[in-house]
Amino acid sequence: MEKSNIFKKILAILGLLLIPFVALYSYSNQVSVQVVQEEIQQNNRNKLSFLVQQIDDEFNQFMTSVNNLGIEPRVKSFIAMDPQSSSYASFELKLELQEELERRGKTGGWSHSYTLYAPMSDQVVSTHGSITFKKLFRDEIVGKPVDPFIWKFEPMDNSRVPDSFTFRTIEPLSAYDHTEEADLVGEIRVDAKNIGDMLTSFKSDSSGDPFLYHPDYAPIVTRTANMDRIDELIPSIAARSHSKEEQGTFITSLQDARYMVNFIKSDTIGWYLIEYVPLESILDPITSSRNWFWLSMSVIAIVSVLAAFLLYKHVQVPIRELFLAVKRLRKGDYTVRVDSGKRDEFGYLFDQFNLMSEQIEDLIDRVYEEKLRSREATLKQLQSQINPHFLYNCLFFMKNMTRLGEQEAVMAMAVKLGEYYRYTTHVDQQETTVGDEIKLIRNYLSIQNMRMNRIQFDIDIPEAMEELSLPRLLLQPIVENAIIHGIEQKEDAGAITIKGLALADEYIIIIDDDGIGMGEESLAELRETIDMPGEASGSCGMRNVHQRLIHKYGSRSGLELEHSPAGGLRVIVRWKEDDEHA
Image 1 (tube, helix red, strand yellow):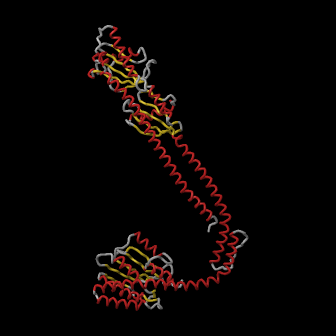
Image 2 (tube, rainbow, N blue to C red; image 1 turned 120 degrees about the vertical axis):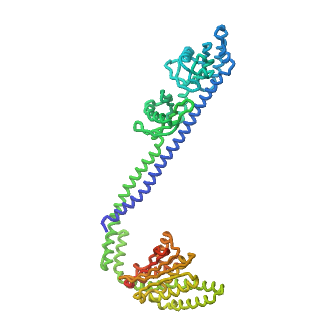
Image 3 (cartoon, one colour; image 1 turned 90 degrees about the vertical axis):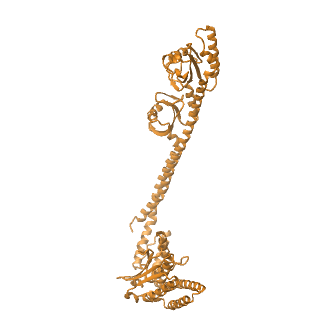
């Protein structure tokens, strides 16, 4: 026994107790973080999808309104206006058309303007607030082809004309490349500031910072956007836009902080709506809980070490003294005493040990005598459990044969049964020889063969073993088990082989059958059953045999169970004559 053996074990136990808690909490913390991240990702994607849908709906409404301008009566009159008509008539028509467009422009929450250009009369009507816009619009339309029916972003250098999203139409469509041949060019211009305001409103209800991104233009941001942070994010976003990703989520680190970035592309305007959220602010409660846990575990570990040291000092040392005294007592030194200088539980224990050592010699004699009587009684009790078992099977067989009218079989069975019980009813003679046991087995197998007529058996016992002393009814339960649980479960004939081996220091009888055998799990359960000491529920003949061998010849004797090469079960009966008086 090492000096610090128990101390080390206590530390190891404390460590093993802490490991499951640490592992469980680490796993729980990891799962919690993952679940929170997934929930936030899903929630943010849903909010972004809803916001993108709102933006697309607004632009689709504008697109529909400008597409329908061509069927308006005043617009048709504007298209057909004669360049040679009076200035008053032309002015009046343009004024009425402008008023109609202004009424349309008052619908919806976003600020926008309509502009119409008739190339044939070279006239422009617009609701745009800038006086110079009409000339800018006319010069742009005349100077280059119109790119109709798509939303385009137009950053403007003119401070009076803000950055806008524009949607243009041309009638007829065949004048796509020749604007001078068109009847009408229409445009609706939506101020980009509308989207910035919408993003600002969205940010007030969110923990992130949203913005619109397009690789060819400056981002559209909220009024309180962190442009430095957005500029750091743009390279990562640009890489995903080049890979044609429509939407997704990724986590990136910026300035020693981690951010969860969600993005989704608008099908209408072709821009990406992006929102980035600092993970630290989201996971702060979980992180705080984790830090408190590790602090608590550190305190527990320190207290555990101190407790283990105190246990070593006040428990291990007294136990060691008692341990050394017991070792001397085990060697036969009954004069050993333990110095009882303590006034605690160990002092009382030492006093009792000293008293015990004085009485131990007398107790040994009495216990040994009781052990011999107990072993004798146990052997008789175990054997008595086996005797009725075979009788029940034989009586049931005779009952069935009588019902079938097989009187000869009944008479033969009665004769065999009488021979069997002539052998087994000598209760005053618990010992027999291997040869007599083999005769009983032959008799038993003959009875079973009368019942089934499909059992073959081969018995090979050396002559040197036939006179060996053996408890009665030791082999019959094993053979019976092979027939009932092995061969009877087969449809065809079965075989049992019994072979004896006389080794240098022990004797072995091997019983094999070619029955259905047992699976590994069932075989393991049977091994546990026969090794169970004391009384067991139910009846198990092989367990009785195993326990009788142990009580008779010692712990190194008994039964061993294996899979038989014949396909069924192999039972090895092993005993050592030298152990009988151990």
